[in-house]
Image 1 (cartoon, rainbow, N blue to C red):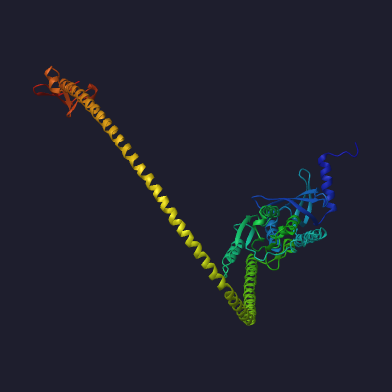
Image 2 (image 1 turned 180 degrees about the vertical axis):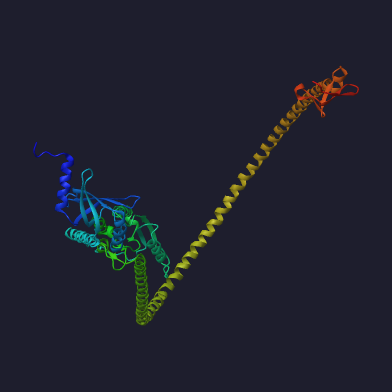
Amino acid sequence: MEGQFTLQELNSLVRENLALAFPEQIWVMAEIGELKVNRNGHCYIELVEKNKATDTIVARSRATIWAWQFRFIQPYFETITGQALTAGLNVLVSATIEFHEVYGLSLNIKDIDPAYTLGDMARKRREVLERLDEEGIIDMNRDLDFPEIPSRIAIISSATAAGYEDFMNQLHGNKPSFKFYTKLFQATMQGNNAPESINYALDMVYAYEDLFDVVIIIRGGGSQMDLSCFDNYELAAHIAQFPKPVLTGIGHEKDESVADLVAFQKLKTPTAVADFLIDKMEEAALYITQLEDQFFYEAQSLIDREKQRLSDASRLFKPLIKSNIERNVFTLKTLSNRVKPLVGETIEQQRYVLSKKKEQLKTGAAAFLKDKAGNLHKLTATTVFTGKMATRQTSQFLDEKKQELIYLSRRRLEKESSNIEWLDKNKQLIDPANILKRGFSITLKNGKAVKNASELNEGEIIVTKLLKGSVRSEVKK
């Protein structure tokens, strides 16, 4: 049937038409989706194009850079951009279109323009800044008040970064010997995973924000591409809206990322960040010194003024005191002249009263003593009679107890004598000599009596003690 093709015929026709339509190299703009280099040095790439609004892939194609070309393209691209060829980069490639009946369409890349990649990064950077400005957050961190004494510092960095070590040495080795508290929140500081890692570290700092005065983000220098992660919108927005001042020291003086532009203060290196914090502490120390000087000056001025006021008051007060004393002396003299006659009259009256009281006391005391003497005589007679009766009763009681004790002692002696006689008889019965007389013997081992055969072993020497003499034996069984 006319118009029918086999698949091979169709693919051959497509290949021929592609060769006619694209006889020379063409420049293609795309994003590197995947990139692999095999052991032979050939580079296999998957190029994609994404919808800017939805970030979904709208086109895909395989591409190849043969080993002999890749050896030239790769170092040239990295030298210009400072970035290795990797997934996620937008590139402009010069390639020939190839179509194989079995393997389909692919691009054979001959060259890559590094300027396009750098330009694409600059474009993205402008778009991020415009978005931050439109959302009204680009200046939020810079508008914060910087703490007067920034001594508690949250550090976001890699623990192995040379910049982190430089910062710590510079900060803690400061000549004024200011004390800083530092806490490291580790993060990846370059590559595609850096924005997410740094944002996570910022979240960790935010959980303890009351413990810190300032946050710093530091790393060593790097190429422009190495620092491209700091142009990320999510990272920049997080820094811009962070409630504590953020200082950055993530590149060299000529490099300025979006993160630098939204941070409270951008400094060129980690050591510069340390110097900035030390300077702030010196400013605070100087301010405190000035306050102390001002306080002492004001205090001294106040003391001098009060001394003058006291001196002035003293001069005015002396005449007043003298006049007041003279008036009081006159008043006292007048009162003394009035009081003297009254005092003399009162003394005479009291003397008369005391005389009457003395006579009454003498009369009453004599009667009281006479009455008490009679009572004492009666009490003495009663006490003597009672004592005699008690002595007689006590003597009788003691005689009775004496007789009872003599009787009980005799009974006790008789009982104990009987017990002694009984014990003496038992002693004679259990005496070893008496036991031997009855035909018994005692077996000794090492001078101790043997009570059980299990105590003996074959070959041991035992001694059998009889009433008269003893026998040595060897245990056979």
